[in-house]
Image (cartoon, rainbow, N blue to C red; front, side):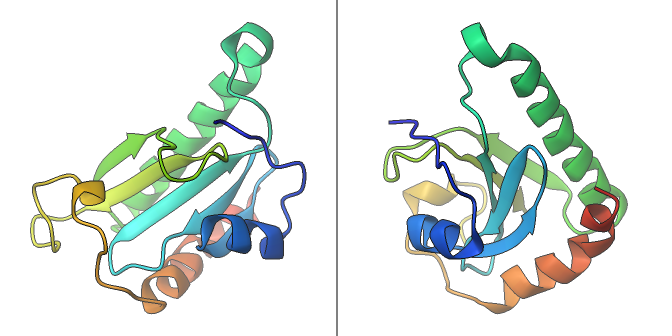
Length: 137
């Protein structure tokens, strides 16, 4: 569990996570699940071992919360769930899911209801909506 991918190319990330590559950030890669829900995967570039990488972890989570603030301020998403789980994929990643009271599984946890409605439109919409955020990085 918690395997760190040594290379963060879009092809490797998309094959590893069966998700759509959105952006490269100095601390992580951003992916989107192929669902109607706004479900992002943050793929860290270093281990989340606090004994050796505490500063990195603090910077990573700070960056994630900057992304969340941007999404909320720009009405891309409001209520969110964030979790580091890796029961199905041993490669280290953090789930960032924006929820709405009318989404298909509200108020339940999304991973209890898979498969979710598929969409390639949502990842593309997220990519366009987040472009100005990642242009500043």
